[in-house]
Each structure stands twice: as C-alpha cells, then as structure tokens.
Length: 131
Image (cartoon, rainbow, N blue to C red):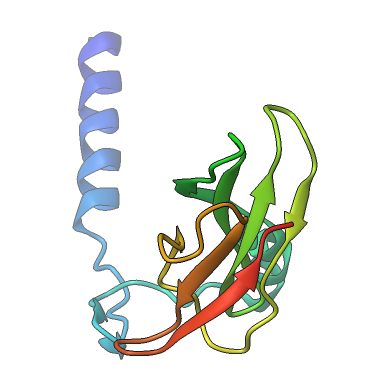
C-alpha cells in the first residue's frame, strides 16, 4: 500500500509539473534568424562569451615562388593577407586595406619577384609586395 501511494504521489507530481504552462515569450527576428519562444541572452552572459567569438583563423590563399605561403587572417572587420615563410614561422602582414581581401595570388606578369596581387572587389586589383 505504501508503494502504491508513493507511485501515485510521484505520478501526480510529474503531471503537475508537465501541465504547468510555459511562459510565452515574444517572437523576435534578428536578421535572418527567427526566435520563437526563446529567451533573450542576458547581457552579462553575452559579455562573458564575447572573447570566444573573436577567435582568429587563417585561410590558405596560395603558394609563392620561394616556397612560402599567403594566408588571409581576419583583423577587425576585414581579411588581410600575410606571408608565412616556413611551417611554424611568424606571419608577416602584407596588406593594410580598409576593404576586405577576396583573393590573393602571385602575379604571373612579374616573374622573378615576389610581388602579388590582391582582389578587394569585383574589379579592383592592387599590387602588394611579399618581400
């Protein structure tokens, strides 16, 4: 009898918990995201996780004739091009443009030098020195 009462009490307790209505949160649209019944992230939590969103990554762009590589690394709001001479070597920043760099390739027109060209837009090509 005690076991039956315990099971009945547990069942009623769970029924009461699951039957409790959830607080309806307003629907929010942020850009392409739609938050339906999702709470707003507290500002303290946003500040605590902000450093993890600002991690840097490097993207391989191309090889240079001397065996070094070009990489794109995000600085601020734009990608900038760096040269890395060898595995594990420090990177050397080559571009300091305000607009993002879409592609960086060695210039075929300038053989024998380490000059490269960057494409900052659909038709914008700029030379840069990789020396």
